[in-house]
Amino acid sequence: MAQAVSPNNTTAANRRRSRTKFTEDQLKILINAFNQKPYPSYATKQRLALEINTEESRIQIWFQNRRARHRFQKRSEPEEHLESSQDEDHPEEKIQSRGDRRCRTSYTSSQLHTLIEAFMNNPYPGIDSRQQLAIEIGVPESRIQIWFQNRRSRFHVQRKREPDEALEQGQDL
Image 1 (cartoon, rainbow, N blue to C red):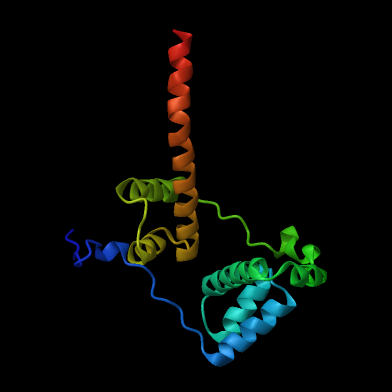
Image 2: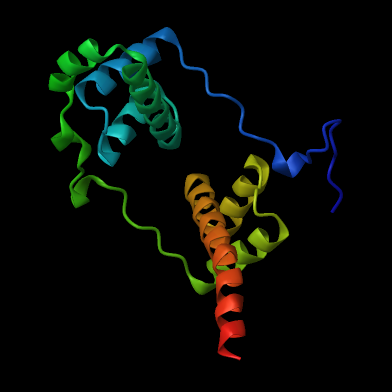
């Protein structure tokens, strides 16, 4: 299978998702929801997705980015402003009950086989590859993206442990 290569050596399969641009009305709805609850439940994110006509995964990313920007702005404020804004923090809102969370995704052995095979070929697939895998195994693309993130993390942890295990085995000799 031939893939088109662009001038900067990225293949079509590694193409990133295009940036999501929200309208003024959509942003007003999202900002209002964020001000009410910066850590919305899965059901709330689904409702917002329907309301502004976008995918729930895009809502989730928007909230993650908004919280990061909010934390960054709080850090850059002078200390006296920080003390007064601590009253605004509601740590109890950050803790989600298990009922509000997305159900854990279970994969069949054939789905896992397909995912592992794809990971061995390319641990950083682009949106096109993830969408094709999603269609192939019948799982939403957002779950494929999370699976690859988790697998890369696990892969890096295992690679860090390998030299330690080799040293331990060398000492046993």
